[in-house]
Image 1 (tube, rainbow, N blue to C red):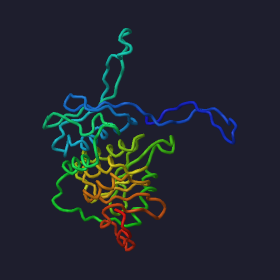
Image 2: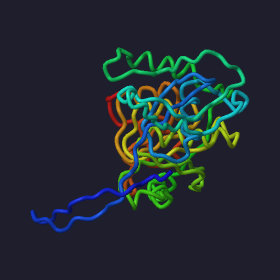
Image 3: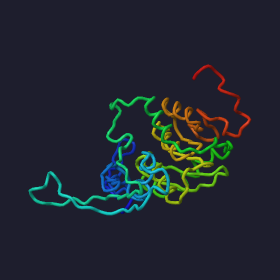
Image 4: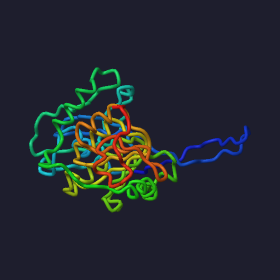
Length: 288
């Protein structure tokens, strides 16, 4: 089960064909997630850390809130008949993760089967996220220095195993206030990379992830903010921009949200009280 595979490519430079050769490409394949013998999701992902991914997804959906909710989790293969090939009785092999819970409650995934046209609105997502977030008892007052924050994209990049090979992997990195990287996971999907980190933490009995930050590649969507909040993470940093709903959700949940972490600069969109720097002087304007 490899995270990359070779495909033939043709290189063009200066308008001319240079050569044709094999190149390493990030693998994207389906993973089926079963919870208490019920199929709850099929997600496209990069193979590797599949149990982490499934468990992180379960945490984000509110199916599992802590280690006490988890009975077992295992990765395996199943075989089924392809609808297109029933006549020939060919079998299709699928990778699945089977999760068993201790509560065995009926599962209704929060965003299962939705799309950008599904009708869910921002206020709905904020309400659902706030209802699912862990009760920490008190505000997480952990602070992160500006030098630590700007160091994280490079530290995460250095810890990526497959990006150099394929150039097609997103990453998520869990780090402490001293800038020590605790866990890094890669995937073709940004959401999957975050789920893999959260699933790893669940198995280490580390949830909620109070006092830790999460660095992600790409932009900070509302869904990534949701996942950070549900995992109890006080700070989410992205190398690119957040969305308006991501900012609104972060502010409602008191999550510190940082974007455009590049070089020695970054923007604070929410929770500036956790950033230890004298340079922060308020919002400096009337924009919300």
